[in-house]
Length: 394
Image 1 (cartoon, rainbow, N blue to C red):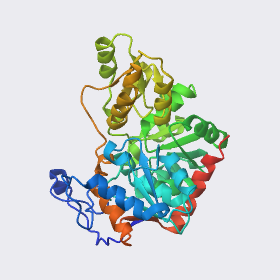
Image 2 (cartoon, helix red, strand yellow; image 1 turned 90 degrees about the vertical axis):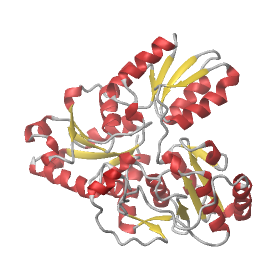
Image 3 (spheres, one colour; image 1 turned 60 degrees about the vertical axis):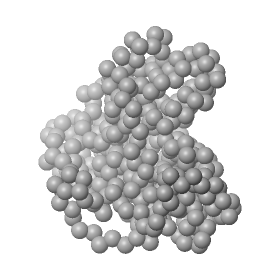
Image 4 (tube, rainbow, N blue to C red; image 1 turned 30 degrees about the vertical axis):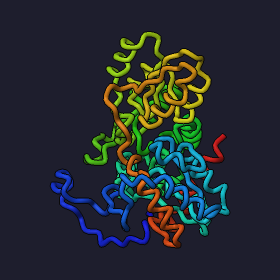
């Protein structure tokens, strides 16, 4: 469980109808949280200079992390860039930095707080920068799922494996029940480890990464996988289905990677003869099966770095990164396009914009701590245990 300080919220349930109409915000969610304080105008021509001045004033006291999916206007101020786990580890390697400003989303800032010292303060420039995938698995839902597995008589055989893209609560559940965390680059190793510990895996919260890793990398069949739907009684599964399954996949997905379809792959092959299709393993199974290459964000970057001049690539991942890579390698005559015709940014990643970053840096420079993300000690202990299991993977 995390607290975002200094804001205090008197949490009351919000009527679902109002949420659907977009007329209210739910304070229990990572989304729709108001940012305290006055933000600079996005039209302020001095924003870049103001960000640079505040960062210089803070000096070594601040360390700015920028996820690959961030806007260019923000990423230019990052001391390091990378995927979520790399950035959290980078933060832990800078104990002299009093403030860690995480330009990413909520679960990433939580992980940074878990892995950094108690003296370091993790700041998220916009508290509304959440993750729809992380929101798809709550602590209450996962506890109920475990009760279902217990009633089916299989809980003792199940090892939870949770994707890095999950809340601190879910990471803590994983640690408490003998499981491990994984990233998109080490999911195969994590699953191999888990099957050495037990007969079944509960994979949270992204069904597609779990399915793709099990089938594509471990050689399982689609029939070995079932999907647990937290919104249906018993997850929408019979006791027999649960007992027969090897992979129990949580019904969660990435809103960006889930947009790509088999039609996207077929269309781009028709439009660009000789194109290489490279996708993230959060994509649907049929997209991954039809692609030429599949890998994590870091894998995608390295593949394009090693690609020969004149090669053509259609990339199935977040648009900010694809556009940045297209610009970076244009001089090498590498043609890089977005896999889908429809332009789609990660809306929550894009919540971190230059006005929010300027506001956060200037507040810190003035001695005011804003938007601190802090994981409570019990949650942190079990979540860290799960993360440490990942670090120890063979």
